[in-house]
Image 1: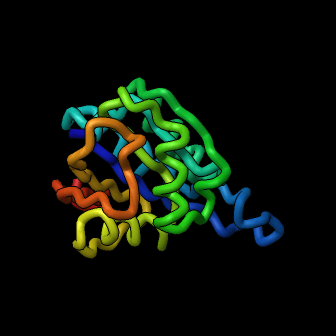
Image 2 (image 1 turned 90 degrees about the vertical axis):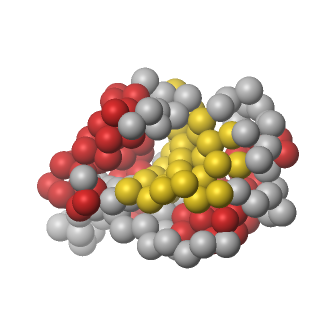
Image 3 (image 1 turned 120 degrees about the vertical axis):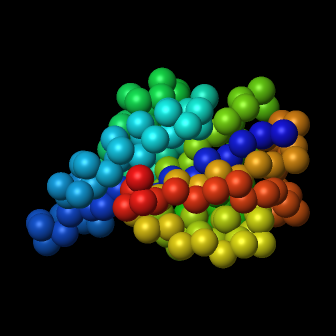
Length: 161
């Protein structure tokens, strides 16, 4: 069995209207929530071995907070910027080694919410900095595909921590 953690980036700033969407940083709430959810993941034993993040500034900063708190290895992949569920599923087997046990994806909606539905059949909203855990009945990440069905173990939101 493998564990997939899905983390939506923390709240981003819209203060500078000249910035491209890709370049938006975290706002004050995001700067508070990213380390909060990262500490929660660490304290609950949900530290990923590998963190695969979108290259958008807000996602990367969220992933850095997670890596700092959990010690997970961070890989940035531009294919995850606003990726759809099928795009995420196509990326993971190409970059994640089969022997990794727990992997985290840090990215964007609606692709992350669609991924949860596709893998579990359950609909969950992922506000900014929300974390979901899916247990997958696979022995290697190369087996992950659109037919894989896992179990949604939990969803945690910073507001409730």
